[in-house]
Image (cartoon, rainbow, N blue to C red):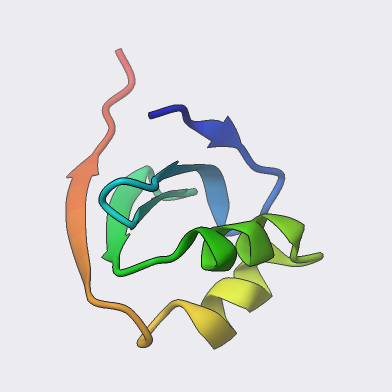
Length: 75
């Protein structure tokens, strides 16, 4: 799984696991959440969105089951 950096006020990076249909989002707060049941088409639409934050608020948050994973620590 490869993390892609994002230019966003809400996110720093995104990753997608197509085999598990799971979207991973790293927020500016360094929290990482994963969203389940996320199709490849959904992922492509997210990447193509002009505003990733607006797309997230309208089409991902409260629409997919999710889990908070970890807060990344800076060494």
